[in-house]
Image (cartoon, rainbow, N blue to C red; front, side):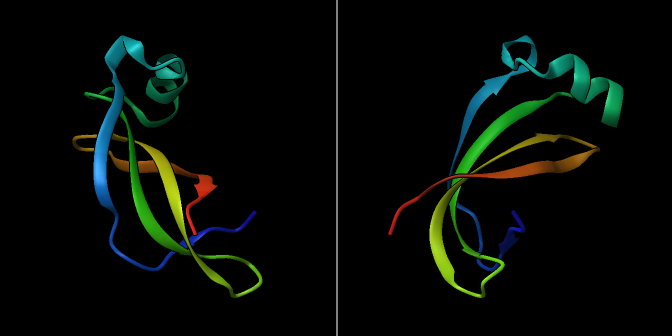
Length: 77
């Protein structure tokens, strides 16, 4: 699925951090060391069909690395 975020991400929360992230070893191996956090928030996304919907988005981020691996979890509209 192609996902394009077309608005600012709002209502940002930390879901897990550090060793509480199941994928922490893969993230460190792939992107490097850092203070990794799993985050969630709300944003408008454009689907591959061109339709725009409000969705809950999850991603990983670390200082110095940035935001990585965005995933749409569910639609809210």
